[in-house]
Image (tube, rainbow, N blue to C red; front, side, top):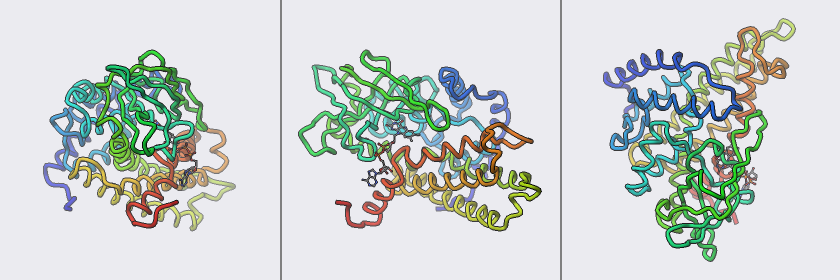
Length: 395
Ligand SMILES: Cc1cc2nc3c(=O)[nH]c(=O)nc-3n(C[C@H](O)[C@H](O)[C@H](O)COP(=O)(O)OP(=O)(O)OC[C@H]3O[C@@H](n4cnc5c(N)ncnc54)[C@H](O)[C@@H]3O)c2cc1C
């Protein structure tokens, strides 16, 4: 695979860099983290700007309104995007990075028409209703049931950890449509409009003080049968498509941010002093920063493979689990490094002397949840062991 940029790809870089250099400052500062309606408005307005300028859906096929950028262009895109400190995908995460891509691969024409252009323009926000109180790591043991009644499924159950549920228009929902077959066989993947009767969303607070996710209670919610994606009871296969996008490519932007974050920590280490000694004066710490940098470079090579595979076959491969595992554990290590450099200053959680302490401490706390979200580290290790390395299955 030749990943050296061609002249055209360099032109792409310059066009993107120049657009971002005007558009990012013009978009202003993000609203407070707890103001979800304002966050939705800010994130979706940015998405619309990206769409109008031709930068939305960077890897999406042109037929679906995307940019269909080459593999190298996609990498350039993530690099320039992080460099410009452009807005995080935010409430558009599910729709743009795994819900929409799943519909492109598995949806009917009517489903694609109804959702894809709107997701791309930032006019439809999605959430993910997979996890349940007793079905997280063991996702296939989910119990939310859907019974057929004419042209509708009647759905009752309880979802948890549903990010963005409080502002979403639609939910990628997993339900049990057949309780009488082995657990992986009786699942279906539905598109649930969030304004249907019988849906109650109760936000949950998190460690870093942000109500990102909610519990979602479903009481006889009537979802049209036309909202079934894939075949009835074939939802586990569709789910694996969704999870490969979520684990393999959805965090690409944040992976580039990690590179920037480490370099900011290294700069901070040269400024912060503890009784006259800079963190940077510690040779062990400098060596660890070097190791982290080398691991970030390795992560990039893994991501290139994953994006390359998605580029060829339309869906990232099973190696998506390795990318997700390596990225999230690395992010925690970078978070630990930030805490060590800042020392007691981090308790204040307010910025000091030009150092973005609040940002470092937020990212470090938030990194803890990343090894759980989208499937915990232990589960990724099991997938790697059993399905990539061919080790014996856990009994
Ligand atoms: C920030 C964040 C956002 C999230 N957003 C969403 C969302 O939008 N939608 C959604 O549906 N879900 C979401 N989740 C839920 C997430 O997918 C689950 O938390 C995750 O799958 C783990 O499930 P659990 O919390 O039930 O933990 P459990 O399954 O109870 O696991 C507890 C511990 O036991 C370990 N464990 C369990 N079973 C095994 C096993 N067989 N082998 C080895 N170890 C095992 C786990 O690795 C973990 O360490 C989010 C989670 C987080 C943290």
